[in-house]
Image 1 (cartoon, rainbow, N blue to C red):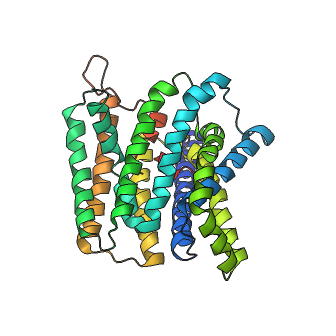
Image 2 (cartoon, rainbow, N blue to C red):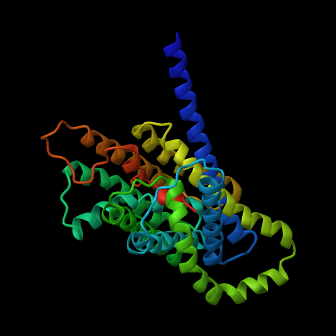
Image 3 (cartoon, rainbow, N blue to C red):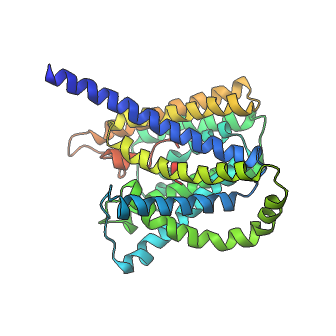
Length: 341
């Protein structure tokens, strides 16, 4: 009887963890798109910088003030030698995501972001000369095919937004791969990652944001008809972006790797649907089919990697088969790197 109750609570906890993760993720994405489209605050660098600042403050409060998470100590030398390069790529990744949201619909952006597993495998194969099981390559076919179909049939296609999202996938993959060597010996969770990287990312982005977007932001502040409510939405998106990082920490400790993989891909479908209901961007039948094929491909890809990770010792496997939920984290269709700040 007791075991049955524990099992039921475990299922309920997993469902609640997934739902709150979906809620924060979709809300942040929709709010960012609303800021760019409805508020006409067309400054992705500034929005990214606000998110970095809010996340840096939030992480400090959680770790130093509220002490909800222990601080992972990093040598001062390693902060510049290891954390700073990762923060630079982290910054590029977030900025490219916001730039893509500025120009293309949420549904199309999320579909392109599902290309991340493919860019990770391709970069490891081309640059790091790693070899992968043929099943991995086969699992990538529906992902690539679905994205090609979505791109060809996208009614709101924009070249700049498309390439921003595509290079965002490359940045996510590069960060994932470099983390193996640069962060070797450190076991970061999502909160400690933000604690160390967000201040560096703010430092990197603040200058370019002021130079490139400062005059435009000033003009917007002087002409915005509902300034207070608009600023609440803009800064509120930064607060929710940090809350998303906290929700990531909760969900990876409440679900299995397989559940996490499926939930990660269904999250894209939820964002796709919610964005269409709110913004009513035109979507063709073939475009929707392309997105569906991509999500099925991502789920199958995660399943294949999980199967290979469970092979007995001595059997051939891939060099980067995920061994745990934390490793699987960066391989799900949207990254969670794309979720952060």
